[in-house]
Image (cartoon, rainbow, N blue to C red; front, top):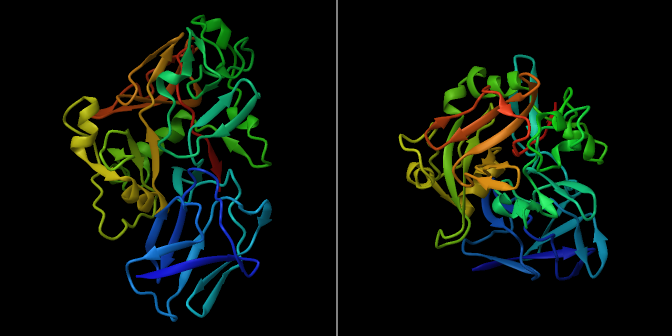
Length: 341
């Protein structure tokens, strides 16, 4: 058993990474550790680490050591020191995978579904791709403080950004007003159009083999999990010792996701590091009622069908539903933003 010690500013110290952010360590190109780093100053590997080994450390959030921000991390193995000069990725950095959404256009996805917190009037991405608020979107028949299911965002809407339980179409009126405007990090975030969702799903090269439904077990017992749709990037190489099955189940149920394929949290982290995107089956909202959490996933597009409906991406365990079907503007759906390359 060998230990990998972390040093900041050449001094050993306890590292306190942002909660629920994943840190990944590669040894000679192979992922050796992929999970949140605990509040300790070392990680133990079962495999021997030689002084000639190449190690890489990725920390997606700034490391805080005794209230001092460290932008450079030094990794020490025995007597050999490897510097990791790159700064940690920005909090809203897009995911690694590249996806074609048109013949001449590629995008990267945000790290999680869009969320809004009313008490602070702030917009943010979920900390993890599989995070979904589900029934917690509503409290006492009203929108909860934090939500991730929105009505459609119309430019002349009284329910601005879809922040309402109203079931009146006119409250969501107008052309599209993109939620990406609310992510004030200086980057250009946006919502995919219907044609772009359709290209990603059906038209890009090898499209049928680059998506599949699955369950991610978030604990060892499988009592906490996330069902959803996994999208694979254009250039896909499956991580060693993981098998990915594209497509959909023959059955329609919450359990059918798990029966089709199930990944442990560690396996999912390897898929994510290789560029995979996970869209959780976060359900939908009608007024103040939540339906179909862990069963259906509905994701808005930027394309209105008419004054009443909008074309969207929808899925369940046994295939696509509601894709381009003109979902009611007042329904609460999930939003996953992208950045153009």
